[in-house]
Length: 98
Image (cartoon, rainbow, N blue to C red; front, side, top):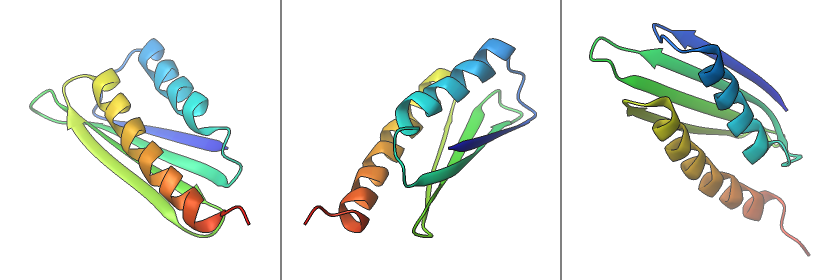
């Protein structure tokens, strides 16, 4: 799966960036129907971070989550939890076992 991460006004260390990429790969790379992911990390004036993750699936559907919080690890975990639920529902609908 191709993962693209963009940062805007977010002061993150290289370790934080690497950990974000690793967390997404570990959790979602094993789904063969996910083709790519676009991740946006946006910092704002109140020292909050906004994380947006958009996954692209083979059957044309996009799966999207968005969270805002003070720490990257916290909002990443929340987004991963929401994405996992949505991806499992997508999998059940589009890839039913006969």
